Amino acid sequence: MTNWTADYDEEPLRELTVTDLLRNRAEKIGDRTAVTYGPEDRAYSFSELNDVANAIANSLIEMGIEKQQKVSVMARNPLSSVLAMVGINKAGMVYSPINFEYKGEALSYQLNDTGPEVLIVEDQYVGRLNEVVDSLEDAPTVVVIDTGTESATLPSNLSGPTFDKLQSGDRSEPGVDVSWHDEASIVYTSGTTGMPKGVVLPYRWIFENYTLFRQQLLSDDDVVHTSLPMYHVGGVYFDLHTGWVSGASTVLWDRFSPNDFWDRIDRYEATTVTLVSVMATWLSKHGGRDTPNTLNKVHMQPLPDDYRTVAERFGFDFVTVGFGQTESGLPIAGAIHAAQGRDATPEDVRRGMTPNEIVDSVRDVGVPVLDEAPAERYMGEPIDPIVDVAIVDDHDEPVPAEAAGELVIRPKVAEITLKEYYGKPERTVEAFSNLWFHTGDTAYVDSEGNYCYLDRRGDIIRRRGENISSLQVQEITNKNSKVEKTAAYPVPAHEGGEDEVAISVEVVDGERLTESDLRAFLSGEMPEFMRPKYIQFVDDIPTTKTNKMEKYKLQQDFNDQLGE
Image (cartoon, rainbow, N blue to C red; front, side, top):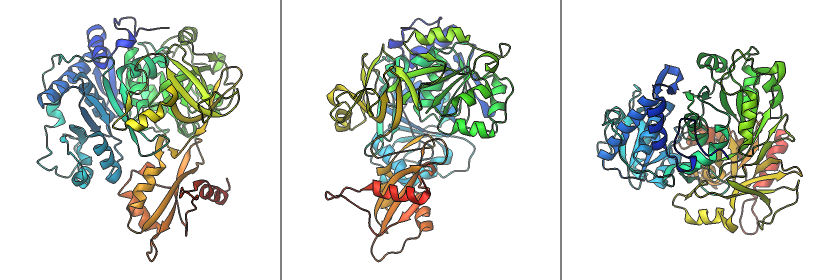
C-alpha cells in the first residue's frame, strides 16, 4: 500500500496534519499555485497560503482561543472558508463549517449544538445571526468577513476583530503541537435518525482514508476543479485536500454552472472534477461541448446509468466511483476506464499521469479498475488495507451474496473513521454497535465481490446533494402555531436519482392555514434546499398503535398522485 504523499514529502500519511502538509508544501514547492478563486482569478501559492494560515492562527491564539476549541465558519465565498480553515487548523483548533443557507431554527440549532468560541461569518449573514442571537445558549465572539455587502449591525458585545485583521497577524509558525489523532473538524450531517449530528473528524480520517484512493490518480501536474461547498467533506477534503496532498492546484467556484462549465475547465486546464447528484445530467443537457478538453478523471457519485455515454462524449478517460460518507470516509472505491481509443483524452492536451500509470497506482491500494461497471449503482470494492466491510441483517449477521442489507464498516487502522457524534455519546455507541459502524445505507455485494448501492434507511431525504433530516423538517414546520402535526418524507425527483421533499400537515382544529402562508413561514426558518416541494394538508396523519407515524402510507398516496 502506498503510505506516503507526494515524492517530495517526508511525512507518512498516517501521521499527517494540515500543519505538516502546508509547512512542507511551502518549503518544497512554495512557488506553485495551491488554490485559485476562479471568479476573481485570485491565486495563492503554497508559500502565501501557509503565511496567511500562520497569520490567522496566531491571531486566534492572541484572542485567547485554545487548542481543540471550536471555530465555526459561515461563508458563501469558498476562498474565505479555505483561508479560515487552514488558519484554524494550524492553531490546533477545530474547523466547524456552517451551511451558508442556514437561517432561523436550522442556524440556531447548529450553533447551540457546536458551541463555538468564535464564529467567522460573512457580513451578508449578520442579519440572520441577529435574528437568532437571543436563542443562543452561549453566544460566540464574531469575526466578520467584509464582502462589501450592505448588512445589519452586529451587537457590540459579540463583535471581535475583522477577518482582515486576523490575516494581518504574525506570519511565523504558531508552534502548536498538532497530532494526527487531534480533531480537525466537526462537519454536520443528517444521518438516518434524529436531528443533524456533528461528525468529529481526526486528521487521519482525511489523509489515510477519505482522500487515499483519489491521491492515487493525481500528480502535481493536475488541476482540481470544484464547485462543491466548503461545509461538506466532498469540497473541502475530497477535492481540496486531495489536490494539496498530491501537489496539485485546486480552482474554487461558488456554484456549479453547466453553461459556464467548459469555459472554466479550459481557462485553468482542469484535469479532474467531482460530479454529484444531477450534475452529470445537467452537463449532458446543457454542456454543449464535444471537442477535446483536459478533463480526464471524473468522480461520479452516485454512478448514473448513462455514465459511459457521458464519458465517451466528453473524453473522460476514467470515471471513479465509491461509497462516500462523512462518518466513514471512502471505504469502498472503484475505477472504470470508460473512454479509450479515439474517445479518450487526446495526448496533446492530456495533463497528469498516463492511463497506464493510473491503473497501476490505483491497484496499489487494492482498488479494481474495470472497463465497465458490472451493475447499476456500482460502488467498487473495499479498500482492504484500511477497512473491513460487510452487508448485514438487522442482527448484524452477514447476508448471502446478492441479498440486500445494511452496509457496515470496521476500521483496521486507528482513527480513520469519525471519533464521535459531538455531544451525543448514545448516538455514537448506537452507531458502533457490535463493533461495526452502521452507515444507515442499504446495499448488496454480488458473487464477484462488487458492492452496489440500493437506498437509504430511516428518516433521511437526499436532495440536490444534501442529506436532509425529515425529523428536522417536521420539527421546524411544527413550530408554526397553526400546525398540529407534520410528516416529512421523500418522493422521487424527476432527475438525478434523488428525492424531493414532501410534507403532509395536520392543521390545529379551528385554525385556517393556506399553503402560501405555510411556505412563507418556512422560508424564514429553513434553507431553500430543505423546503418542501410538495405540501399536502390532511385531516389525519396515520399512526401505528404505538403512535408512530406511518409515513409509507402518505408516501404511497403521494406517489400514486404523481404517477410514480
